[in-house]
Length: 248
Image 1 (cartoon, one colour):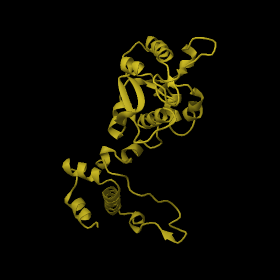
Image 2 (cartoon, one colour):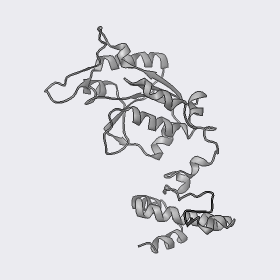
Image 3 (cartoon, rainbow, N blue to C red):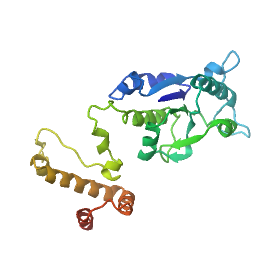
Image 4 (cartoon, helix red, strand yellow):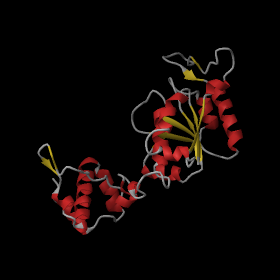
């Protein structure tokens, strides 16, 4: 798949694309990331990409023309109908199901806004999808774009060291959409705190029951909405419901 990223700060992506386990996806082109600067498509000696907002007010607004010309160059090179994504507070919140859809897609053109925003006329004419990471505002769309790319990359075959790793992520359907359980490693006792004896027992059924109980407990306390979804889907067993009934 291919993701074309329109950003005024392509240098922000340089360390991201060559660091960590997900670099395997970018180096192998399983996730082909290409960076485009709209300033390269701006006119005039100053290559201006922003201007003051009509009606007054603080800040600057990204101009439609450089973005449109940059997008046209991308679309001519891609020769497909990849969606054009804008990271925006008005967008649909990204979740695991959304990441799975993107991970099986042809990719997209990702628009990283800056300043007070983007000229609405460009959005109305060209943007097909808007995505939000949550109810907060970032200085630009670059961090949001990296979050989507990272989440997509780690779901590609061969990217993670263990093929089963992503199946045990929080929100994964393999865990019935629950949050993941706590994890422990050596030493067995650290700073007066011992690892749970169930995990040291070697009894696989006991270990799995402990992990399931902790997932249920954490989810019920932190994200009870996910418990409701799992219950509605019929994903909770009698043992699960018995554990939940004991929680305060």
